[in-house]
View 1 (cartoon, rainbow, N blue to C red):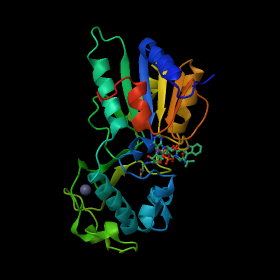
View 2 (view 1 turned 45 degrees about the horizontal axis):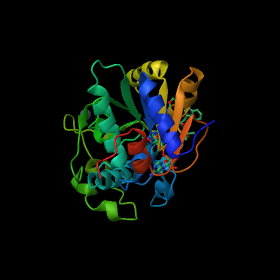
View 3 (view 1 turned 60 degrees about the vertical axis):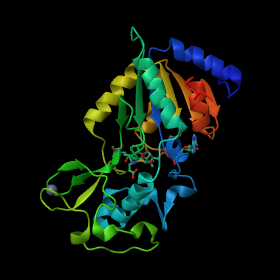
View 4 (view 1 turned 135 degrees about the vertical axis):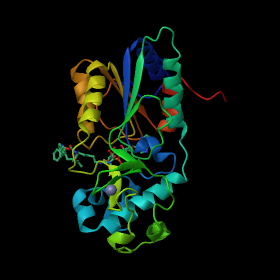
Length: 270
Ligand code: BV8
Ligand code: ZN
């Protein structure tokens, strides 16, 4: 029977947290919502007249690379103005707590679907869908970090426009090595994930005994299959969401910027 977010359930969760050996999380767009970054399926999931899922595909990029780059430029510029919120900080503080244990008898791994980089100050995290601030050359494959604002002159100021600017390829972001067209180094729909990342994730899921599902609608695969997998191996599930997204041993319904610090017992001294 899942507890709801009463103080008893926080107490029960604290016990489960103490006795767990391998704690892992799956984070989604809801983790960054309180930083002011729209989620995919909330009202923010639209950009101009398109759904995010229509633009995050190789077909969309092939058909209209300018529109897809305008979409990612818009998201880069938005995220560059945002800060991690209390939920991001709770994950970092909890990781510090685990890493300072002597002897270290627990592990903590953050698996995130988010590409906003707001969890990058964690020491042990897996960004399974890539990063808005990494690019990959479509010609030579060269990958590099890129937080330039704007990423290229042609896209400057388009983040405020409601209409396509149809930049020609030569005005789109280009490779510093071969001048070829570069793309965001993210996993688009219908693209396979990096096998090394998938292996790392499966190693964690195979030993995880407490799985925190934070701010995700659980609709995108393969991430959507992880909670059931952990449960099938006898692991416990805890959901942190503003809506009830499924079965779990613990449910903390509310903004994760409030529920997570309390559940991980890393509340800021007020
Ligand atoms: C693949 C990067 C092999 C790009 C993203 C099996 C069945 C059906 C379909 C498939 C399947 N296997 C594969 C597929 C196809 C597809 C898929 O899953 N489609 C879905 C839509 C049905 N998957 C793939 O293509 C994957 N590749 O499996 O390769 C393959 C290939 C072809 C065919 C078969 C197999 C690759 C998927 C990766 C896509 N890339 N991101 C970019 O970001 O631009 S996914 C993207 O959407 C995000 O990264 C994120 O993962 C996802 C959004 O999900 P959420 O994070 O959950 O966000 P959402 O808005 O939905 O929910 C937010 C939640 O937060 C809500 O629940 C809300 O209530 C909550 N919330 C809001 N505020 C708060 C809050 N919670 C707490 N506090 C708050 N304050
Ligand atoms: Zn190149």
